[in-house]
Image (cartoon, rainbow, N blue to C red; front, top):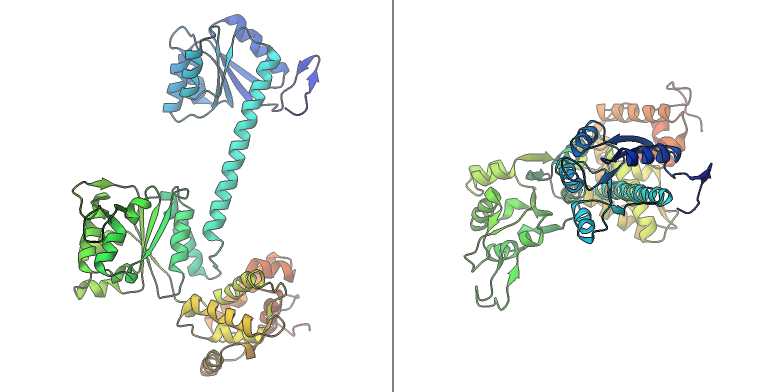
Length: 478
């Protein structure tokens, strides 16, 4: 305690209202602690034996238990062990009339946070109770902080404005919490399958374990097998030392097999055997090894077609396809493009020391109308090039690659639609902007933050769709 508080000569707790159960077979001890701790600001209940204490704790778990070791039915150590078996994690301070080091050690091993010998001093008990409650509060705060950091780490690089991407985020959040099921992420090259895999790991109970990624096409079959399963010394000519495989390294974490559709038949068979029971053998070993890993895979191939053509094992496909996640290409979710642009520009502002980096509305419009065969990765590369070649921290149409400008203009011309509401996509975009503005009380800065786009982009869209603060479609105020 940093500041001591007294009232009528009694030391007051830092945690008024905290609930404490006093468990002691001596009525005088129970009566004394109940009265004194109530005066200190705690809420007190009492029990005279271990059986009653267990029932009371199960019915309404207190913040802390003062538990005597010697009880008439079962001793306090056994009561504590029963609590931990039931998953009850309330704080427990042991009391004993015997200053026995063995009992103290046994109590701490069973899960007690402190041990107080009798006779005890009331002020000392209050101080120890507050110390235990302070420590528990700190642990809970750290746990909340770590959970928040984990959540941010998992989702901070995933931009989701479109309904489909929000659905995917919902899926990976629910899948991650489960922690074990195999996940297959499908989508074109560059859509961000690796980000989703990392998010699943970061949001899962395995987040504190390793995340091991391997790009399968980077290795021929014999090297990929060696990377995954490892080898023993002397297993082959160059095996001068023993090597752990990535599956062992990922123990209690996640392994991400990227582009799983490209692995050869021999590795497919061994991977299937591993997925069945999480057991494998290093190359050159007869000893079976078991690891606890979650397997996340990704592919840009049509695995069903590969199965029909005999290029991919049907049984392996079914084993991988437990939880499939289909990521749409960028041209099918153009609502995400303005938010992705702002997301990457924010990264580049820091990376290239250009705090005032911006992009013109005309440039944004061209990027929206481009087809993006390389998906999100191509968009990022395009913007990075534009940042490096742009003038005075401003990305204009002239900063963009000529091919993107040409094709984007052709796409926009081919649509041959009026400026406002030329497609259902634009109708949805207009509706989202209206909802954000109304929710933000027509504060454009706040609405742009909600939409994760710049204020200039928002004003451009408002002008395009003739959205005015009067909430009616009419002339937009310049």
